[in-house]
Image (cartoon, rainbow, N blue to C red; front, side):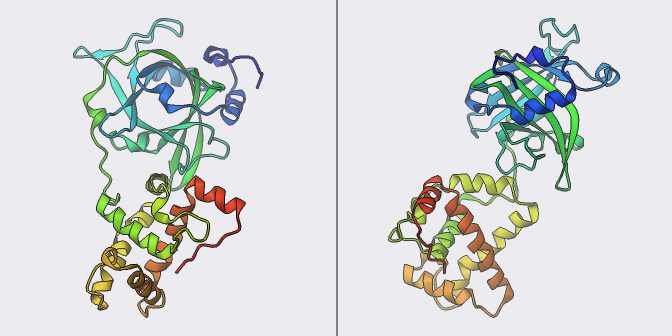
Length: 325
């Protein structure tokens, strides 16, 4: 790509292989730079017949929901007045027609084609949409110029049964104006039945802490001192539903099994010595379910611990060991 500034309109006549190269070499986008803005979108890469049946121009929006802190958005249908005409939303009942809602997320943990992990991801599966192909679509977004969120490039791909399928549906985005309309449906909270409650997360973190056995003496921080938020964000996006669904029963099993084994209290109420005693017994328990729960939580505990940048940096600079049970 050239060193000079690239405008979105410079790509309106570019062939698909050039557009793809810009996706692969694009620059990260700061989500804070998008908040509160509507962008003028121009569809690229599709045959003229398909464009005539759909649209050439549209709007994409980026709205920070204050209740959930999620960066949300929606597409606005425009009157097709011409590629250089001002944006004029189609309306119904005096309100802009919106569709294809989405959440904008970081690319970490999102399945995507090789090399597409340069910027943010517009994820339609994480917002209220009717059933259909929209639930399979994701759009990576990159900046055309470093540190500049005025000119963006995106492309759509599908994720079906864990397989990423590229499409020729490219589009440019140009910053247009502040959002002046928010549809009621977009801020509906996303219900995730597999997400652990805050209480269950505390139980899980207590188990992680006991399994890792880090107290700071090894040169690494104790598990209680690391930031667990990044791990939980990744865990909600990356694993398949069966992995996420299996965590809850495993956590409940190991949390309350101590009561049945004579400790008379759940795991999170045990002393440090009692926790170590229980975990040492659980890892060699004759019951497969208990041993499997221990093996799974050991793996996740390591992921949670080393997700913290301070832990990774210390581990890379100092040869220390983690005292796994």
